[in-house]
Image 1 (cartoon, rainbow, N blue to C red):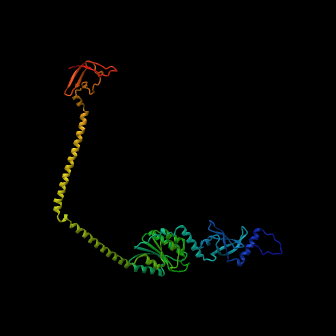
Image 2 (cartoon, rainbow, N blue to C red):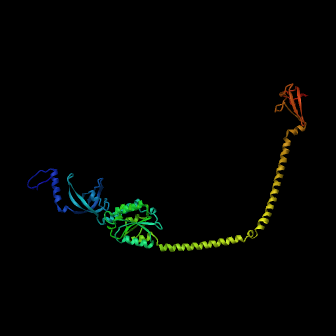
Image 3 (cartoon, rainbow, N blue to C red):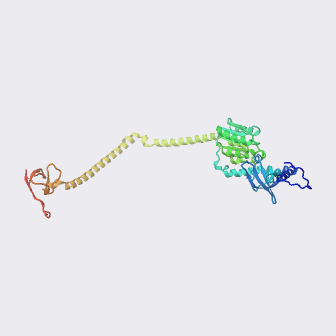
Length: 426
């Protein structure tokens, strides 16, 4: 909607839209409101699902609504949050729907601290809380790696220095070199993918990721979250070798080992072959001395055994001394057997006497007899068990009688004398 220049002397009735468009047109043409920097404190900060950032910029007296579109937010090196003092570059215009003016932010940086330093502190604090710096999860470096993976730039002195040092310390060591960019927007992604590729290939025992010294901006690829997580997720130990000794990056905190410089990483990752050779020579000499001492000790022990009488006079020890001992043991065995037999015989005699006392044969010898019915195992104990005319067998101490019962005399219930049976011999 276009409006002509209004004449103050002429009264004109405007719609809300016409007035809003007029004010917007005035603000859009004001050079002060284009590309200006505004200082203030962030409040009401909200990142929408669309990726746009909505916030309010305020100071002690006033506030202004602001918005930063997704394409601009993606390039921020730090995370805006409430209470953060910032400097915002953008332009001011009217949001026609609400009839309000607001600041459209195109660039933002912390007020007082640098944006990169703030981003470094925020990411470091967040990853530390997640446990990415925990010393308990750090992996040990192998003592003597067979292959070493190096992730760094193909240009510059870093790769040449590391290869030179590695070849000097251990000639013939295999090196798997993955060239990447170490600064710029694409550097972080390339470094992370290189570390992941070496893990997937699985043909190296340790990884060195690093670059030479530089400013915070130049080292920034090693302060990104994607590189930190690729190091943390690596199954292969990772040595971070970024910058100089005074330079610290997020990669240094996450890595299993931090080397102050790339050259120091090359010194650290593999021992010097000459030193290992000297160490092995020392160990071999100590082993030989120990074995010689052991052999000497066991030779003395063997000689002591050989000096014993059993080896000097084996016939006497085996044929005479041992035979005498066998004879002694034989006599003791015979005595033990005889003593045991005597004890058992005495015990048997006692038991036989008891059995003789309880035997029914002894009772028969004293004049008693046992009366039974022929062909039955039972003993007749009462006259009522026998009828007249039945046959009974009377067993005596010597022999037996087969008798025929002529009559029986049964006891009365109160009788105390034994029943009398009249028998006739058969």
